[in-house]
Length: 76
Image (cartoon, rainbow, N blue to C red):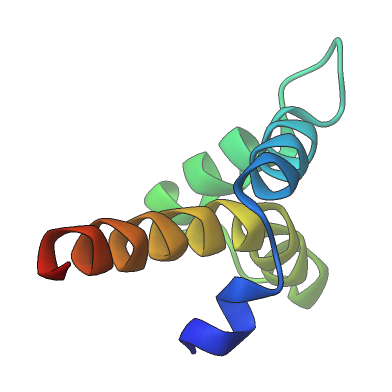
């Protein structure tokens, strides 16, 4: 997993996370909409589940990369 995360740099993950996390600009972001649907139990359509996965993946990767980075920094 760590080798996969080493492919992406922090700036790239931050930019992608901000872009996909806030898309579409001007309306309610899809990520917030899908999280609200998940909390309400309305996330049943496959396209909505895929949309949640697509918009949240860069954020999850950024969090994991940060955890591994901090763990390696503390061990050094």
